[in-house]
Length: 273
Image 1 (spheres, rainbow, N blue to C red):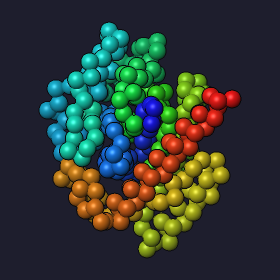
Image 2 (image 1 turned 90 degrees about the vertical axis):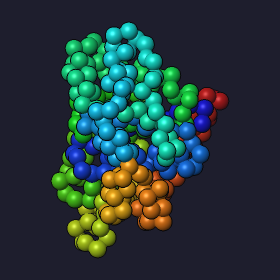
Image 3 (image 1 turned 90 degrees about the horizontal axis):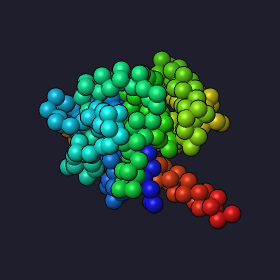
Image 4 (image 1 turned 45 degrees about the horizontal axis):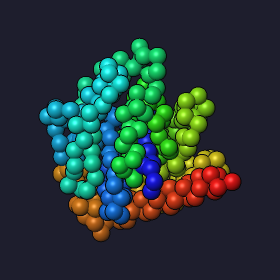
C-alpha cells in the first residue's frame, strides 16, 4: 500500500470486544506480512494489559505524544514499541484522561492525533486505533484522522441499540471535520449460534444497517480461548491458532484487506480521469 490506512475500532459501550478486535486484527494483518501499528487511545490501557504489559510501567505513551504536539507541534515517537506478535504498539495509561481534559480548551482540539499520526502513514500499511469507550474528545480525534471505523457490536439488544448514536457521531465527524471518513463495517461479536436470541439480533443488525453500511460477513464467536489469550498477553493466533475464533479474525483481516485494495483502485481511477 502506498500509504497507511488508519482504522479506528470504536463503540461507546464496554465489553463488546473492542480491544480484543483491535489486537487480533493487528495480529492477523501482521501474519499477512503487513506492517501494522496499534495505538491504545483508551485511558484504561486495556490493549496494553491484554498484550501482557502493566500500564503504569510505560515511560512514554500516546498521552506523551499528544502532549508534545499540543505544546510544541512536534512529536518524538519514542513511545513506539515492538510486540512479539509482529506489530508495533503505542501504549497508554490513565494519564491520557488528563489529555482529554486539555483538549477541551484547545481551538483545534479535534486534530491533535491527526498531527501525531500523519508522518507514520508512510511507515505502516495499517494503523489501528483502539478507541476510548465514549464519544468524547479522544474518540473524535481518532475519527478525525481515520480513514474508516469498525464498529464491534455484541449480539445482544443493549449493545446493538447504542450503535445508532455511534453512527450519528461518525457521520457528524465526516460532515464537519473529516470528509474522507467511512464506516468500514459493523462487526458482530460474541455470537452464540446455539441461542435464538443471538441469531435474531444478528438478523436485526443486518436488516437495520446492512442497506446503508457494510456488515462484516463473518461474525466473531464467543469463545473461552479468545478471553484466555488476552489474559496471558497473546492474540488468539498465538494462543490457539486452530480455534474458530482465530478463523473468524483471519476472515475479518481478509475483508479489511479486500476493501483497502478496492479503495486504492477507486482512488487510482479518480486520479486518472
